[in-house]
Image 1 (cartoon, rainbow, N blue to C red):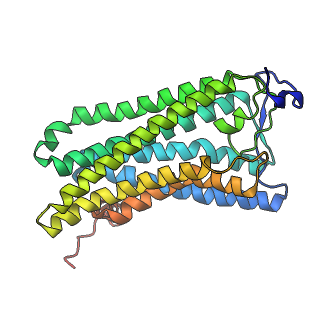
Image 2: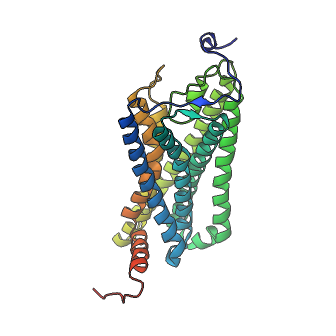
Image 3: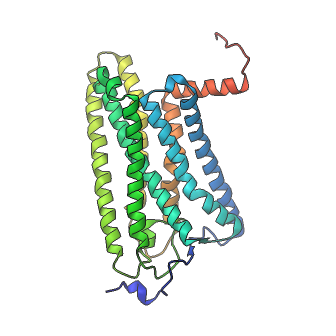
Amino acid sequence: MTSPVADRRPNLTSTSDFLLLELSEVRELRILHFFLFLALYLTAITGNLLIVSAVGLDHHLHTPMYFFLMNLALMDMCTISVIIPKSMANSLMNSRTISYSGCVAQMYFFLFFGGSDFALLTIMAHDRYVAICNPLQYEAIMNKGACTQLAILSWICGAVHAIIHTCGTFNMTFCSHVVDQFFCEVPELMRLSCDDLYLVEVGLLVFSCSAVSRCFVFIITTYVLIFSAVLRMPSAQGRQKALSTCIPHLTVVSVFVLTGLFAYTKPPSNSSSDLDLGFAVVYTTSPSLLNPFIYSMRNKEIRTALWKLFHQRHFPNRIPSLF
């Protein structure tokens, strides 16, 4: 039994280009969208690149927590680079098209980096738990080899997640090439299916949601134990230092989860709207855009490393002042 959509949509070959959502029919507004996306993109890239540079060049930050943070910044740069440049190019060139292979690649890499991102956030929660609840064993447990393996594991989880959903989505037969979104997104492409194979992808999405829910429960449980340990610390300075490394991570997790819920739990609609487009822009750009600011504002060591990086770049021969 085929979907009712098949009755009103012409069948397409697998090599057809897709038509993405046009941000505006007015050229002036398309130019405005281009510069808005350019500002968001450059801000996100610059912020995350500063994090990577600070961690890579400051030996004081060569610790497990900052190693994972550097990986997170790399993932955030890649995530926003998968979506925004193509949309900017389409706005500037008055185009809506994306090739079939380009759509496959865009979906795969967006799911890959997004899945890796959340897997890494889960690992970072474990790192904070060991550091605060078992500090005497921290160096033994979170040694260089273990950290490298955990980082690789996060990338592998993202790759598996992306392969499953990309294969599940593009095994479907599409009855239209008009995507009601400004990038190739799984739910929007599922709406274009004219066979029952979309039910397979629905099952895969349910499986992924359950896996994400388990990770989220793990993070929450971990932080309940962390805050219990922090409250038992006799020193106010020790509590403040512990919280200064936990609050940014917990804030980043909240941004990641809330933006995802914001996008995928809204009531479904048959046509795109400005509100749906706003939701999509928020959840595709917010994590990459906000994460560097969250970590730099709440973390004194990152701020110090960034200041040293700036000072050495612009005043390499200046003797530091005592004041």
